[in-house]
Image 1: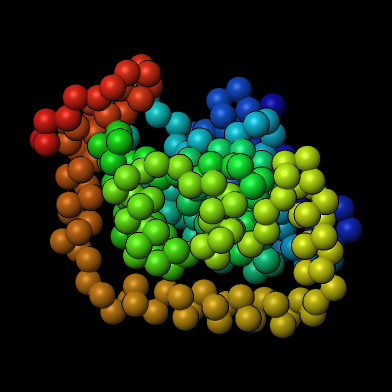
Image 2 (image 1 turned 180 degrees about the horizontal axis):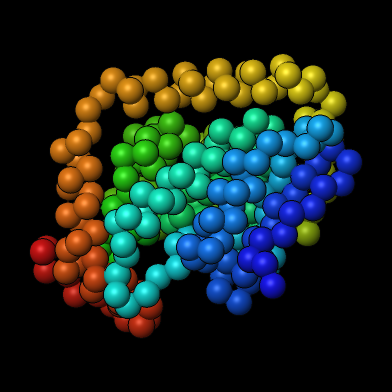
Length: 252
């Protein structure tokens, strides 16, 4: 059984995460499939893609193990997010439940987020001793600004879909039972637009949003991020999360 399902109905393509028994956690195979799905050229009639999932959880992020998180895997996930962000057609995230860590970032890299009003979004990386990369931090600041990013990253506590809608990060909110209809209404509206116009303006928006990535040096911070992933605290934090216990951090 594939970890994702891709279907096209008329002008709307749907990419569905199908790993509900693992809270739709992203393992290397799912990552490769998502990269492939979003690096492919759109079909001739496609105007919009919906990214959704099966089960009560949208996506719980990278699959964790007691051995910790590989920094190279954290870099690899950037390729997946970049593929989603730069897909020519508008991409709508349909978030019915928790979007945690990489699952939160996955939604943020879509052009629109339609979320259940009570769906929790969280980036609890400090709670498990790891860090965002330069690329992922930039996306959070772009979406919510420094104040919201500090709350997301330094506290790591969840914010609801309704709260993120108030902050201008989530595009639409609805009761979870009405989510399909809310997404259908948005995709129907997008599908009526001229595709070349949408594709070009999406590239313009992405290019403007990424301007400072090319002018600000961050090699020193990249080294710090790698050190965080290699730390004893990272191994302890991830193991504690997997084992459902409180971590004991030592600052090393």
